[in-house]
Length: 297
Image (cartoon, rainbow, N blue to C red; front, side):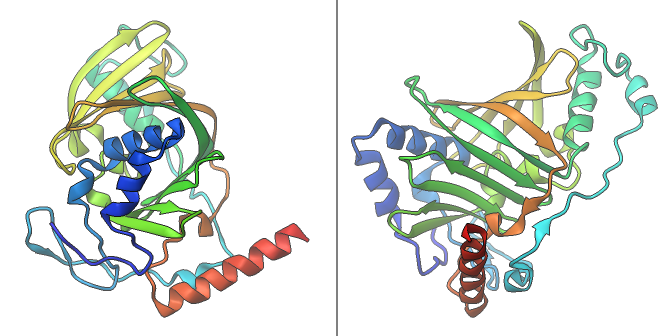
């Protein structure tokens, strides 16, 4: 499958070079990208202002891109999001808030998971990624609904994975390159929906007790390369998401452990900027540089 590519895109050579680098961290990032995006060789490169091919090869209309330059210096302010009423959860046998759900019915657990994800508009924190061979690399996570997500890896890794609501970009800060993917074909797309319903967006295959918490297992059959399995781990009261695990269509498992999560914190909107090579993107880059220079003063 082919598609339009941004001016910064380096094509398959970027990820091939990444896989060939001797640094353990790079190998882990390659595995993570496989898990997040599916088969790397089937990536697409949508341009927001153009009509992009869908997964089945047919044309799919893209929504007009937002004017990012107009909001260059604005933060993403969390919206007031109402939590689902506890009476709705109780209707399927969910224990009262603050009590353990380890003996609850699966439907109640899934509804509580929905309530957790729908209780925030923004989410920030740290993560530790564990690859299939056990090696680890950390970084920062920023999320702003709808559609925006950013994984920024700690040095020495130069990589960032950014979703802007239309596309997902894998960016190499050192090489100044990026590859673009359809956001609809990533297994974590449900995390950045305005309103999350796990049973609607994915296939719930299992709800089970774990030591000290609860695991919800899901399948996403719409990812590139085949079906991805997603496991979400919560504490016993389902107040915190502690980690997720993604098994990609090739069977490789990547674990992402979460720490110091903060709900509702204002997030800088420029964190989710993707450069498509348009005139407004150039203005946005210049605005970001001015903001960074002012912050350093």
